Length: 304
Image 1 (cartoon, rainbow, N blue to C red):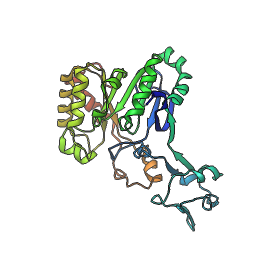
Image 2 (cartoon, rainbow, N blue to C red):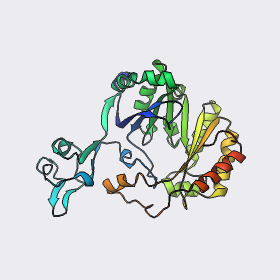
Image 3 (cartoon, rainbow, N blue to C red):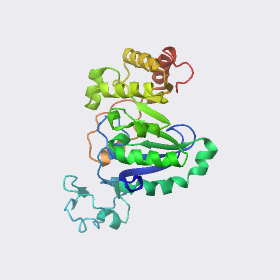
Image 4 (cartoon, rainbow, N blue to C red):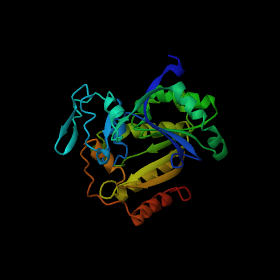
């Protein structure tokens, strides 16, 4: 298949990003993820398919969406409009008639070539700032053919490329894909295998094997660690992770990302069970304590 004919499902093209790699970047959020992390800020990216997002605060209960719904997933009740997600086929007709823009279609199928045309518009910002393109998600390795095609297109344009992944699907990253990747943002969810399994439903080993593979290739890595009070704040386990990361030899930066509640509204809109409602946001003191561990264990000047 020609690279420019490969298509993928994208939720957002976020320009002017400064947190997903060096310089000013355009971050592409792809659909599809094999994990269901309890603190995820982008649960709308879990499923590979497009889906309807209903913003309840915007809904004026006019009922315009109900008669156009071909699957019968929408109905009008006394409390307002109700969306039955089991019946919804994400056709998007409700989006087209909603006067309040309360209905939103999350995900659009695009070709790699079409996406490259969009990215060319951002090249002046990349060149001026030393930035580039970051593929995130979800997990971009959930759509390996599309991810590979986009990375190849970026390489042909001379753009700096970054892959933001948990690494659990690292087997999907072929040699050619990694050759077209300048930097990997590696998100390791936990160090203890049992904790990792309970938080993600998957095993830690595939992530570590991917990390070791990147080290053997001397591929630059920025390690990311989400700090969730009462969930991922075991200091002994963090010490173990930091020591292992230091031994890899290719980790250039560590980002400790304090948990916050800013993504909770997405869970509510998607009718997902959000189990961290009572979890406090990670304090500055705790975050600095964890950063101190990474500094002591081998990263004195590159922990953020």
